[in-house]
Length: 327
Image (tube, rainbow, N blue to C red):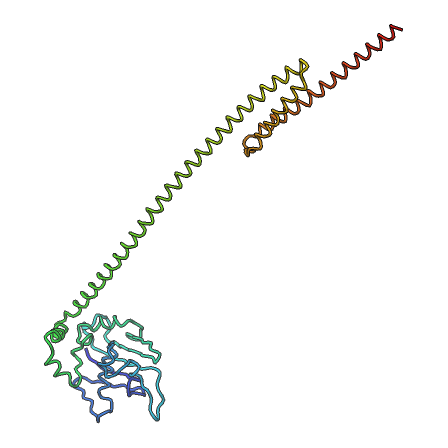
């Protein structure tokens, strides 16, 4: 795998677009202090996804965008593109030539592109994880870092050795799997809490449902008992009406109409009072009985009145005939 070209625009001191080509062999960049030699190495690390501004000799990420000077205005973005060739199975892709780009806007937005197609930082990191260019890249050693590598702690030296041996990818996958397992465990705890809360609410709702069912059963039983009591009262009233009807008929044919009318008037009042008790819709038959009784009484009165008038006319005729015979 060979780094053939670096394209820089707006990164640190590169206000204009600059392309640096690297031919096979050793390439040395020579220049005076402050001309931007170290900025090229920083650009390579930055394009590969470096997230620490201090490792790139800055305080914040927006420090890497050209801030302008007395003769140049500030630029709104920084972009670095790396061109790699001769991919002979070193990278997990079928392309022989690869372009890796990173853009940073002054608003804080950042973009990563792989062969000019937007991608994630993770995609770039996974591609270069076993090449010495990802994470803590041992392929990029800046000025003053050789002594730190020699004097590094055993744990830091082990990281470099593991990456050179090609096992860093598996350790990274292991850490990602453990992180997912931990997140899954936290989700399970939250699910258990939700299940416990739902179970508590379910038990409460079950008790309320049982109470409602019990109330509905008792209300139905109370309605049945009320209907039964009204039916008994209706039966008793009907029997009383029949008894008074018999008494009325007997008194009509034996001359006791005034007292019979008084008694039956009481019976009619009793029937109407029964209708006023609130169950008019369920016991309308009682009103029909009272109406029938009133019609019967009116008919009886008319019959009694006609009979009385006829009797008086008969007696008057007989009296007139007796007077005529006397004279």
